[in-house]
Image (tube, rainbow, N blue to C red):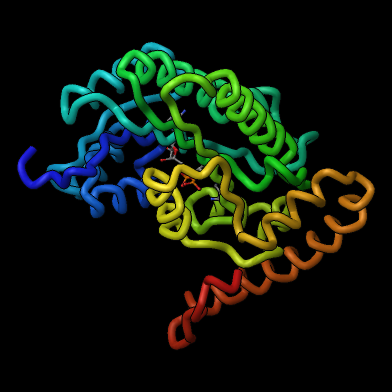
Length: 289
Ligand SMILES: NC(=O)c1ccc[n+]([C@@H]2O[C@H](COP(=O)([O-])OP(=O)(O)OC[C@H]3O[C@@H](n4cnc5c(N)ncnc54)[C@H](O)[C@@H]3O)[C@@H](O)[C@H]2O)c1
């Protein structure tokens, strides 16, 4: 492709129609990489790819479907050449306490977040190893360290993703591939809007939230710096990681964080309602969520 920088990589990004995945694709293209955006929502991902110009293309990929993974890798290869970097980003949640979710909802979360990521990683390992190089970047979650009320199965799926990712990275340590895992905290996407609508998820609002572009910057930087694991925020994330090791400490700390989250969530809802009334000010800074 003419005008492609020398250090340009070919990325395949899952869940790229919206949220963090869309921000990763946009920044990667802006930095000269070529990106195959994939998503279960075909129309949305094609529209998103079209908006990014000639270094982006889109195709449907339901990460639960092994055959669809092969097709997506082939589509990326046809458009831009062999995939250098897989970004496992797609994920879902169903909000609420575990006892209130249906068996189908529990299964959905595990099938997408854990099994979908496993299928994609295994597909990438086979294809990238055959090419002699590759980098698998997995967007996981701080809930992989800290179990939270309102997120039981989601946390379980993300604990599983982290354990799988690091196990595979160890298995492949003598091979040609690199592995990075990145753990966002609350990030202002459709997923957080979904959580805002459910008081059971109040704990997500206990701390400052991030913009999807902040997470995207860490992911796209990782293509070059290849860190093993990144937590957010740098200091607070490490504290959360330690707290997650001690169940008695969690029983004491998490209810306090949940109460703070409830207060912040109520303030945000009130601010939004105020912003919708004609003649009232908009909430000035969502970064204080
Ligand atoms: N938003 C947050 O607060 C937050 C925090 C920590 C981690 N994460 C993780 O970041 C990743 C991206 O989340 P987001 O906040 O951008 O969510 P989002 O809901 O904004 O976007 C997720 C995208 O994934 C797609 N998707 C859903 N099911 C799919 C499937 N089966 N196959 C392929 N694509 C599918 C959706 O269509 C959507 O475009 C997820 O893995 C999520 O768990 C998000």
